[in-house]
Length: 110
Image (cartoon, rainbow, N blue to C red; front, side):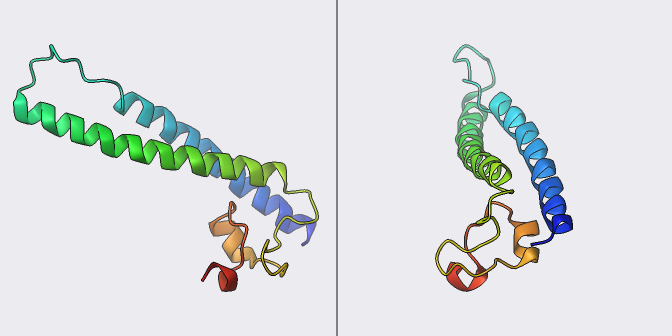
């Protein structure tokens, strides 16, 4: 892997981390408890509760992705970065740019 490729990966990961942190902050706001004394009506309250649980699931998923991206960013200078953990073959650069947190090549992902 060339230095230019690593720098491109580093920039991609940094951008994704920044975007994920912003998304997580927004989702945290959307998952705040719904006050029972709010006069929003029964159906509206049910919608709000449903939306909250959907947002909580999205928040969990984003936190997991952020952890994986931060791990990839920390390991970018290691010799194993960009190598499949199953077959040890190089992961395609396009896959790393699309999913920097990926630890397996396309072949092994199937």
